[in-house]
Every structure is written in C-alpha cells, then in structure tokens.
Length: 332
Ligand code: BYC
Image 1 (tube, rainbow, N blue to C red):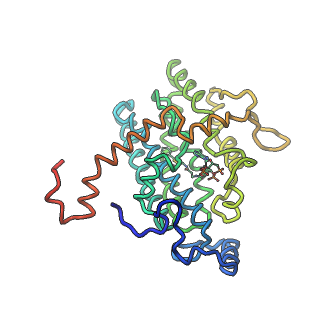
Image 2: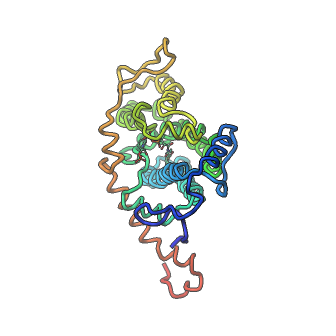
C-alpha cells in the first residue's frame, strides 16, 4: 500500500536477509568509534542489527505517540473557548500529525515500511506514549496537555536531538521548534485558568491532580528497571536516562506550577538540597505497565479511531499511489 521491499517487514522476525545485518567485530568497533567521536550515523552507513532494531522501536513508538496524541486535543477543536484558542489548537493538532509523518519517514530509512508500522500500531503490537490513553474531560485537561506534556516531550526531544542517528535528530530539531510554540500556548492557557475565576482554578487543579501520575510515568520506568536505557545511552540514541529527564522536567516546571498557587498530588515532592535532585513518591508502576500494554481507560477507543481513519482513507492512498486508477474511484 505504501511501498514494499523493506528489510524489517517480513513476518515472525525473519528479517535478517541483508548481509549488512551481520555484526562483524571490525565493523562494530569502527561504528562504536564513530559514535564515540560524536559523528552522525546516516541511513546508508553500516550499523549493528540491534542499533537498527532499537531505533525502529523507539522512532516508531514516537511517531505513533504523535498521531494518537493528536486525538485527545483534537476532540476539543470544536469546543475550544474562543476564536484564538481554537486557531491555536487547530494549528497544534496539525503540527502533531506532521511530527508523526516526519518520524515515520525517519523510521522508514531504517528498513521498516510505513504500512508495517501502521499495521503494528493497529494490531496493538507497537506501543505509544502512556499519556494518550487518558481522557481529556475538560478544557483544563487540554491546557495541562498543552503545557506539561509538551514540556515533558521537549525535555526528551531536545536531549535526543543531539543523538547519533542523523534522520531522527533532524526530525527532532524540527519538532522542537514547533513544540516550543505548543508549550507557549499551553502555558498561556494554563495561566489564564490559574488566574481566572474560582471555578476555572478548581477545574485546573482537578486536571493537574488527574494528570500528574501519567506525566511522571511519561519518562519511562526508573533507571534501575529500564530495559533499553543502558545500550541506547552507549550508542548515544538516548542522551539522558529516564530518571535524569524526569528530574530535569521537575526542576523546570514544578516551581512554575507552585508559583501559581496550585498544588501537586504528592506530599513527598520536594527538591532535596543534599542531592540537588527532586524527591517524589514513586508513581504506581503497575498502572503504567497496564496502560502501555493496552489496559488504560482509552486504549481501545484510541485504536478504534485510528482503524476508522485507516479504513476511510484507503481510497485516498490508493488514488495517490495509482493515479491511473483515479477515475474509477468514488468521488467523496
Ligand atoms: N509510554 O527500557 P525503557 C508528544 C516502554 S508525543 C509507553 O525505559 P526506552 C505529543 C518502552 O517502550 C511524544 N511506553 O524504554 C503529541 C519499553 O517497552 P518495549 C512522545 C513506554 O525506550 C501530541 C518499556 O516501557 N514522546 O509530545 O529506553 C500532543 C521499558 O522502558 C513509556 C516519545 O514518544 C511511555 N511513556 O525509554 C501533545 C519519546 N516509557 O518497547 C504532545 C520517544 C517506556 O520494550 N521515546 N515505555 O515493549 C523515548 O524517548 C523512550 O522510548 C522513552 C522510554 C524515554 C519513553
């Protein structure tokens, strides 16, 4: 449908038909030397199988997060309060979909087709960010997403944009420019509610209370339980550990929340002067794993919407891929 001949598309993991995928020790040493020097790895360069596999997993998950992530906010376009908020939200949602496209392109350079990635999303095989499996019940939820989830994403993306794989880094650079605008509009809406009527403040506080745990989960499990961090950091794909990114986020954003007189639902949250890091109550990691494995409150709904979109858009993709058949297709 989107093209074929990708080395990672064959079923049952039998992808190793390309000679390049055999990890010869001299090649591996030369590759690791390039990484150590801070060089960018480009699509045509030799790379270890596991590096390729890990990048596909991570970039694909990121791409899915962008397109699924557009859904909670997208449902608020018709209800955004006022013309300016509506315009900003439309632009933001379009940007998020654009980010998904950039990231699918980056992942395709590693040998997995977009069709295979979409199929893996729809079948539930691929993951996407935990935070998008919760409902956006009120305008304050959209505000918290626009401010704090975009802020969390920027912490992650600005760090990894300095990583080793050229196409992913270039996509992240571009995404970060747009996310900075998202963050500004989220912050502006956040301040408006925080300094608004008692009902607006209450709505914002309620949204913060509900979103805090998913946001703490956003950076992934604690370093001691992170399966992939060590190798990804050695290969400079991940430029900071999960706990370091979480700490960086707390450092930058908790003071901004507190200075507005709002609270966070964790009595243990404080900056520890001895460690110069934030102390917090460990969020419920059972809940995290339940949500990322399909058991969150909105997982089913999110995938249903994407399945519907995939089905409805089939004729468009067909027309684009086979222009000669255009006349035979229905006029929508
Ligand atoms: N959600 O070994 P670990 C946006 C999984 S969208 C789900 O630490 P890793 C926006 C992980 O995949 C941008 N799953 O993993 C859009 C692994 O499972 P598998 C979102 C998670 O990869 C619209 C297992 O847990 N950003 O900004 O070293 C509107 C063990 O974890 C999560 C990205 O997607 C999670 N939060 O590090 C508004 C960033 N955390 O694959 C805003 C790209 C962990 O072995 N991703 N898992 O089955 C990353 O940078 C890394 O994947 C993570 C995790 C730092 C998240």
